[in-house]
Length: 188
Image 1 (cartoon, rainbow, N blue to C red):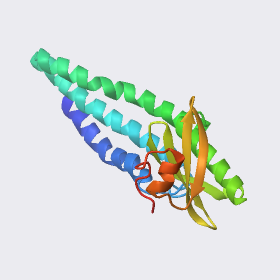
Image 2: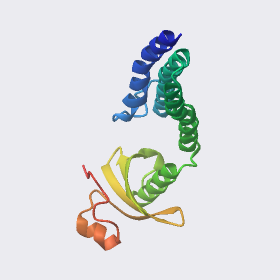
Image 3: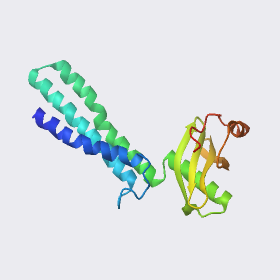
Image 4: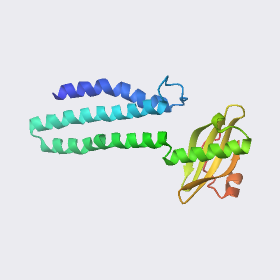
């Protein structure tokens, strides 16, 4: 039985890792075909948890068969996250797609501010990446016509307010806003 679990986990682990990692490697929203890339990545993460569960279940069953209670205890302890993480992964996906998550709120605030600042429709702007420090965030916005812009946001009582928009921010510009000078990792 434990060999079958290890075999099933091994078969599942490879494709699961590809699904979990590939969409996050610079993929655009249309790169996953008719499916949303966030959904593909969520499914991959859940499958990784299932594969991990199968591996640890094999150790647990083997420990029971050998009456090695230390193996059983450690296997059960290591197995626990693979039972909890899928629920957290689904909750994160629901926050992302439902617009209730903090990242979605930051991207929405940055896109709205950028659209108003550049007199562009919000639909033409895409939030690409977020850099952050406590109380501050920088959202990279891609405009189909004008390139990439950075919107600096500040949090006050869990509300993200845009502070400035520019193609680049140097240390002096960040300092003038009161933001940490190392807020933005990569300006390119």
